Image (cartoon, rainbow, N blue to C red; front, side, top):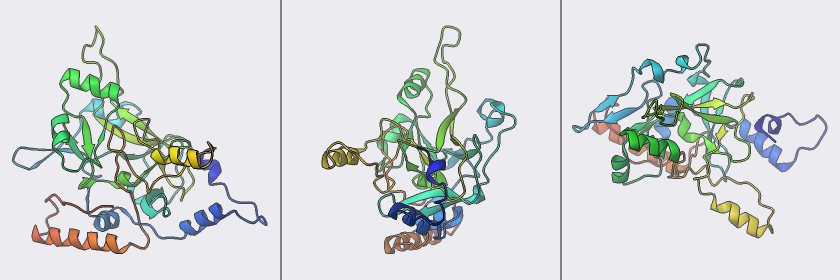
Length: 295
C-alpha cells in the first residue's frame, strides 16, 4: 500500500516470493555516489551550486545566492535535509532501469533533494534539440508565470543536474512529494502577480527505510502507454511497471531512461569514456558544458 509497507522484512521461515528475492538481490548491489554517477552517465553534478541561466555569451549565471523568500528556512526554520552524500544511484532492474536510494533511514518531511539544472524560458525550451530531460511547472503555475512575464518555465538537467534525475515515477505509491518555493498563490486583486514558485524540492511523504527506491508521481501529464497495453493483455487487470524509469518530456516529467549503478553496461562505459574525452579537450576545468551521453 505504500513503500514503507512494501519494504517490510519478510517473516523468518516463509519462502519469499520472486519479487522479494529480486529486491533482496538488488540491495546487495553497490551504488554510485554523486561524483561517480555523474562521470558514468556523462553530466555535471551541480547540486552544491543550484540552478543557472545561460547568458548570451554562453557563460553560466547562477541563481544563488537566493533571496529570502526562496529559502526553505523561510517556510520552516527547522527544515531538515537528507545529506547528499547518503544518496546513491543504483540499478533497479531491467524494467525500471536506474533509480535512486538512500543509505540511511529517511524521516517523514525531511527534504531529500532540490530539482537543479539549467533554467529555461519557453522560447529557450522550444529551441532545445533534445527536450527529453527538461521538466516544467504544472499548467496553472506555468500560465501564471507567463501572464506575469516570469521567464523561468523549465529546468533541464541533461548536461548539468543532480542525482534527482535518477528518481523513477510511481503513480500509486510515491514516497516523495514535490514542494514549490515560494508557495504558489494565484493572482488576485490585492496581488496581481500572485506568488510564483522559483525552486522545487522533493520531500519525504512518510518514513522511508534505508535502501528503498525513492519515487515520486510524475503527474497526470506523464504518458504511461504500457498501462493501457497491460490492461488490454490482462483483461483489465493492469499491473504497474515503470518502463526503464522513463521521464516524460511534458510538465513535471522527463523521458530519458534513468538507469543507474553497480555494474555499468558497455554503453555506460562508452558514454563515460566519451565524457572524459570531451572534458580533456576542454582542459578539464569542469566549466565547459558536457554534450551527449544517455543515462
